[in-house]
Image (cartoon, rainbow, N blue to C red; front, top):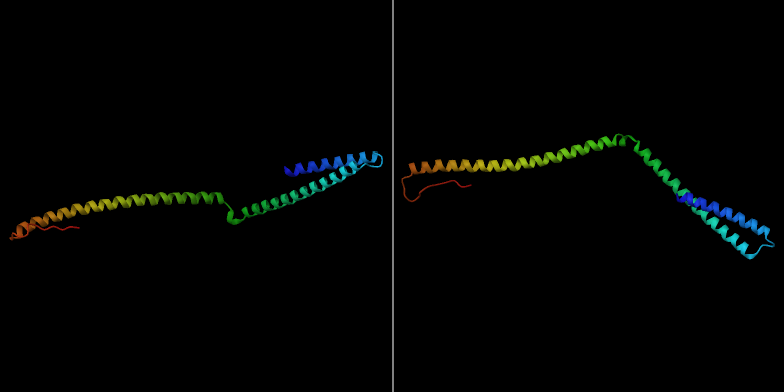
Amino acid sequence: IEYRERLEQCKQAQRSLKAKKAAAKRASGGSDNTVRDITRLSEQLKTLRSRVDRIRGALGTERSTVRDIERKLREKQYANIDKRYRDKMIETEATTLAMADLEQYSRVLDKALMQFHQSKMAEVNGVLAEYWRDTYQGHDISGIAIRA
């Protein structure tokens, strides 16, 4: 867009320069103002042409870059990249969910094992206390228990 604007300004400056030159020829002897205008417009024309050339160069570079990137995207390593990306995202999400499920399962299992252990220890201590009362005849120890 900037290129087109600069090109239009360049053309406009050329038309203005031609008009000024024609006016200068018609004028007798050429006044200082006309010569100054011609010189000023010539400088403007050079500046605008320089800008147009720079923009053309930048545009060419950008187009070359785009072509290089498009060529790289057609290479084998990027073939079906959208499908491969989607598959990896699904795999990652499934792994994350599986890890969360395993963590929850681990916590529940630990809790269940602790409850089972406590109930079995209470059962063992009950049997142990009963055997202690039946077999020990002394009066110094009233009972024994296992603590964990």
